[in-house]
Length: 376
Image (tube, rainbow, N blue to C red; front, top):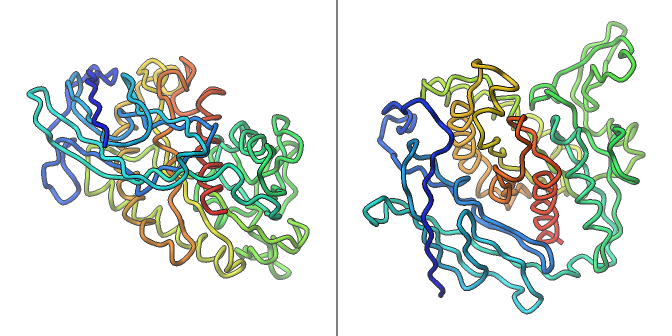
């Protein structure tokens, strides 16, 4: 087992001090080092995968913390553990991440499994994918990257299902990704009138029923009428930002209650997917962290939604997503660790809070692709 260490000054680009309540969970217990790791990190030979340390822990501003990585694979750099796996490394190995305070004492630790999947996993199969999301999906860059990777040698024949093919979508790329949408929007948004040009006013999964159309969530009908009858083998859902962005991070109890409401909507959509396509494997993407720059959030939202507010919401949301969606593999529900392999500095432009640049989107695509390969 290799032990590597590095130290980071997590300035987090925050100018205001953090109140004690920011360091507590909803049950009131103090948790000054809130480390989160998903149960598995996936990698494919030849496709770079990283674990960015600052995406795993919520700590006070200007706080010096160190990280120890115990893993027989990969290398440690200043801000990340990095792996570009080789075919000889296919298999599973543990990775332990330790957080140390300024005195060098270990204050938090967690273990995940690094799952290196063969580059030819799923070769000669024939699969269909359905990607559901918000503006990050609408941009089509990470679906394009998934398509590019799936087109490399050693992969299955693939088809992306979806009614939405924005101008930026590559050949063969389709999805259901719409700017500003939430879990609830996909469950209920419906307008019987034809949408204005270039707009989508109804969920692709909701249909009007009766003379005075009453909206009904019906994924089986979506498959029959809008997907050419092809059922997806894999459903990838990347939602959460719009659901929670405006929540108040200063009230932990209220924040958890609001996230409970989001999960009710998530469970409704997942249950409908499961009813219509019981064999489909569903991957829920952990909500991605935002840009590390305060200025990027100010450029988009002025003082209304500061970066540190979203950072606290996003971290709590990931904690809750791990609890809510974890340990459900027997029901074909899986966690996709999209929050780890995203560089919040070089993977974002200087002037956008939550939308990555091409590098960041490609990192998201690589994470989803690697998870798909693990299921193949």
